[in-house]
Image (cartoon, rainbow, N blue to C red; front, top):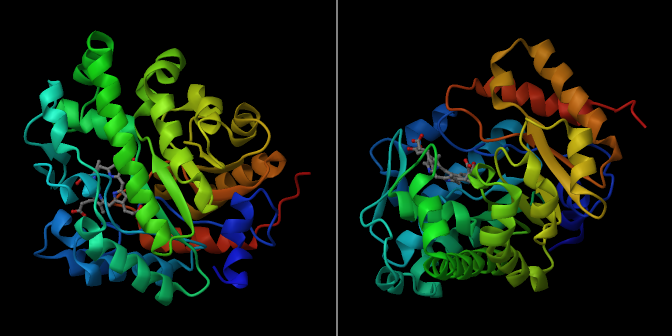
Length: 347
Ligand code: CP3
């Protein structure tokens, strides 16, 4: 990492410092809200595009060029490392990941072997190329957390209530922990490969952990997420840990070994800072649907968030979840300018 990269507002805020402007990036900043993304993806399936080095580089760069965000997020998907080791799954447009043989027995776990560097060489090649193109803008690598990955593998696809996932978790705890142990190993390997290829931060997405009570999270999930975060601790890059509807889990998700805790829009930022506790930065948390309101409304909400985060040990501005496909890219461009120019009056 160059010294100017280390001094980037994003990495400073992740380390708990106060840079000269609030850094901002958006989850799902690359994707269907961008016409240039839709044009490039025309005729190429989602998973195929994730294994095409040229497409990964171009799609990752698109929002950086358009918005001047403070970080790039690597274009991929949480199921990519599973696809890379041969798991039979696909990403169905408008649905999400769909798995051919949902997990019901221990015998099915043998397919979850370790990742070999060759399995993901188009991806690590893309990271290397991107780091060159990005210059001093940091690249965030990412992986799906064990629970969120397991939820797709057990349900066979997206789920509202995670009934089958919880059924397995409560009825067959040995199988559950074996499955999450394999997911933790794979997620950790995938993050390590991205950082070794040049990524300067990682985000662990536990998008669906908010479906769990704190007690169940701590018993069935946290040790595995902690194993992932711990497995990359030696690399010295900030580790961001994010989930949706995780207001009750914020402290625990930080305690799993995060440097930055991602917050959705349901908890006000000052309360989130209190729940996360000292020693960690926060990221978030504008409701993505706010972007469909008038500009003055969007910006007043953004200002409230920055003011409410003034007590935080580092704040990275983001949405509380991903950019919705119908979002007007111009509203995101205006928001980036607003966040960069806003000087908080809160102490
Ligand atoms: O810009 C970025 O944030 C990087 C790209 C990114 C994608 N997926 C690309 C994608 C990231 C970080 C992800 C992670 C991901 N994938 C998560 C965790 C983040 C979150 O949103 O909570 C989850 C749960 C998935 C699983 C998944 N993949 C879903 C739910 C979907 C949407 C299905 C749909 O069509 O509505 C996908 C597909 C997907 N991943 C798309 C993109 C751009 C859309 C597919 C397309 O463009 O054809």
